[in-house]
Amino acid sequence: MSQHRCIHTSLHPLALAVFGLTAWQTVAAEPAADTVFRNGYVYTVDRHDSVRQAVAVKDGRIVFVGSNQELARYIGPQTRQIDLQGRMLMPGLVDGHVHPLTGGEGMTKCSLDYKPFTVAQMQEKIRGCLADKAREPDSAWLEVVNWDRQATVKLDRDPVKADLDALSQQRPIIVTSIDNHSRLNNSKALQVSGIKVDTPNPTGGVIGHTTNGELSGMLEDGAVLLSDSSKPQPSSSEQLHFARLALDKFSQAGVTTFLSALSDEAEVKVFSELRQQGALSARAQFAIKVTPEEAARPAAAVAGVKAMADKYNTDVGIQPGIRVSNIKLWMDGVLQAPAQTARLLAPYRVAPAKDRHAEWLPGKHLGEGYFSQQQVNDVVLQAAQQGLDVHMHAIGDATVRQALNAVANTRNQPGLRGFRPAIAHAELVDPADYHRFRQLNTTAVMSFQWAQRAPYSVEAVEKQLGKTRYAHMEPEGSLRQANTRIAYGSDWPVDPMAYFYNLRVGVTRSGDPQHPAGFGQEYRGRLNLDPLLSRADVVRAITMNAAYALRMEQQVGSIEPGKYADLIVLDKNFMRAPLAQLAHTRVLLTMVGGKAVWSAPDFQ
Image (cartoon, rainbow, N blue to C red):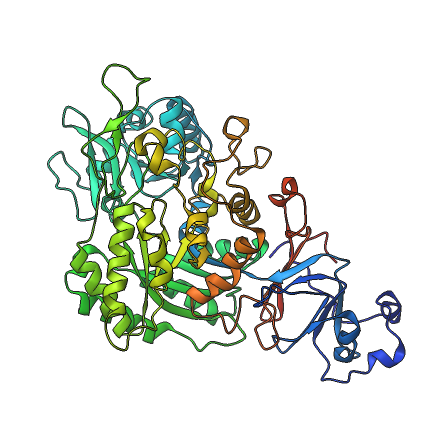
């Protein structure tokens, strides 16, 4: 890593004076540690959220947590000593839902940078990307990422294939929304993908049409796979490059463990190769997607994932390893208009025909559900029987209930109460189901940043859901009050990688207009009145709770003796700093298994 700075391994005699050590203190009463940290605000995330001053690390594990005075017995002549000067040290971040290979690949593509573009501004940006790649053949695909579709709809309109055809009718062009649930294609991309007016919707997806029945160019959810399977696939060396980009970004952000939440064997193989090269700088877990078609044969589908686990899983150890741990079920889409593919218990509301200022009325559209209840029941049960966990994408209240019903079915089976299911996103939950998360020991994996005001959380859903449902959209606080275990998942690259900004949203349910990940003054203020989370809640969500969901709570997630030395040092005290500063917290040092994988240039 170009900016990586190693911590000094040798000590000048003057260093002893700097740390206030006397000669007798340099003789360790315990086996000398490899590295010690002192004079810090050590936020342990142990059972009591204890705060300590000092930490000692030996052979990749934490061997001591306590006071500066007690630390002395762990210091020997070769011990590396780091004076934190009051800075906060905490466990490494555990991202419970992220898409590393997609994120890394996106860093190499034409990007709309999450910005609120009109259709004309989109076209101008894409035109520039085409110019940059003018020497490529006409058959080369142009892939555009990080498009804020809801912002474009608010500022202008939903674009169609003709808007991309105006840029090129020779080159296939695809533009993928930030939520990865929608993709706009030009006519050439549709043609190459074999998508025609009469092409049936694939299971788990929707092919968009205009009001006159023509192809709109938009593909929703599983229909995106139709163009995915047609465009050129990256080479092995390119995939390794994408993975390295993601790992480097994780290290700088303080991520030491992650779950790739929509994975396949190709991705597992890439990260396994990096591990073999000694280049894996975070503990990698994978949730393997099972499609509705595969769910029709649940035993075979689960057996395939189990075989993959047997093939790739490495023993848990100090150095980062690989674990295929979960089955992923992508059960519905998104709440936001114009897609509205998340499945609801009651219909989305629609604008009155004449008076646009009147209250919106119930419509007929309930959204999409991609699995039957029986399919989900069968896959969850088979997974539990094979020792695998399930990670279910469920956004609408109907789909959340479906996921909970499947867990309840498995919990009722003898001998299967030890599995650890998770429901990701849960943006809309019927209040009658809040208590069921705790009752069924099901983790809610939430992306706190979605609880801020933004085009996707205001214009795209507020009137469409109605006052009652909108009041508790993104119900992290309500679930927490029902004693649900809340874990955190960034869902990067759906949003920019900005962990402490996202945690700050969890505490305030509002964005920071001054931060690059914010949406400006127009969207200042609190999203709704669902209860707030505490700072302790959000930190535990991205450490111990996410570690529990990944069955790693005995190894990582807190600063306690015996655990792996996965830890980070911050430039601000997230537990005490003013709210205005929280979003701007930076990681100064990231350590995985006692090894520094990132050190900021200004941290010595």
